[in-house]
Structures are given as structure tokens and as C-alpha cells.
Image (cartoon, rainbow, N blue to C red):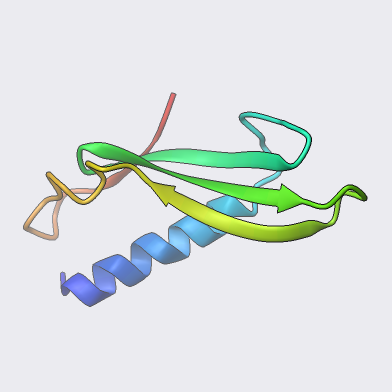
Length: 83
């Protein structure tokens, strides 16, 4: 699989799960989305909310090892849902 296609696929999946209604952690201004295992690390999404609850920002956080240990071939899945 072409590396650009793989990166595009990963970003599309992260964008889709970042819009999930299932929440892992809730605080006054930041709501965490899903966490996914990627390579030797984790990728997670979040939304920052204004006081009225409207989103002011969305983002994706990559751990240091997320881009290490990725498969070279195209036959192995690289994303798994964290427990």
C-alpha cells in the first residue's frame, strides 16, 4: 500500500472516530474522543468546548511511538481500538 494512501486512510479513520459520541474522559473544557493503538504508541482525538458547550477546536494527539513499528507490507491492519 502506498504510504500516502495509508496516511490518508489513517487520518480518515481518526476523523470519523473523533466525531464519536462515546467519550472516554470529560472535563470542563476538553472532551477526549476515541483512543487507537497505532504502531508502538497511541493516537487519540479531542474537542475543546466553550462555556456554552459549542466546540472551539478539535484535534488529534499522537504519542511518541505512534509512527514506530508500523508494518512495511500492506497485509497487516495497523489500527486497533484501545481497551
